Amino acid sequence: MPGVRVIRAEISAGKATNSPPLGPALQQLGLDPSKVIEDINKATKKYSGHTVKIKIIVDLDTLKYDIITELPSTTDLLLKAVGVESPSGDPAKNKIGNISLEKIIEIALFKKKELNAKSLKAAVKTILGSARSIGLTVEGKDPKIVIKEIEQGLYDDLLRKYEDKWISE
Image (cartoon, rainbow, N blue to C red; front, side):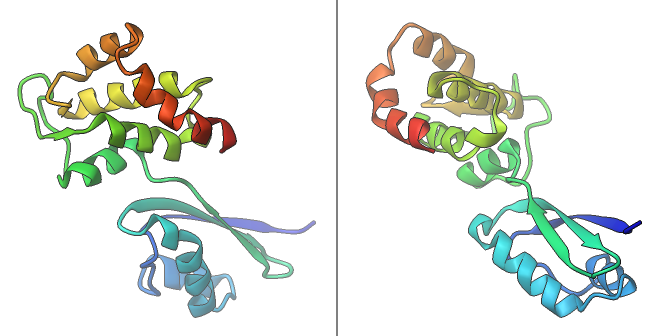
């Protein structure tokens, strides 16, 4: 019966190193840490500037491995978009930044495969909820207000510009 081991880690995309915990864990399984780290960095390079979770699934009999990369969290994407390190401790009173609705739409498109949204409009409203929970305003307004405006159709023209990307991705 083949043995499989899974190594989980959170890394800075494209910047994994041989230092603990990855290097020693890979070496302990009989893998060449430098080669695996190189593969991890190639797989995560497109998310550069973000923290990503990875899983390395190792077949202990053949020492073959697969690297599975999760997308950066919505919170991480929102914080990076406004240049802030951490969410607000009191998002109702302490706002940490402002973001454009277009950037919210881009994040919704980026996170499409992880969101349970049937439409771009629904995905955008999900991201707006996350923005509100960490203390961001959108277009200078509380995201809850922007959600109501989306439901009223105020941003339909803007959303239509991105609808093709939602459908094709």
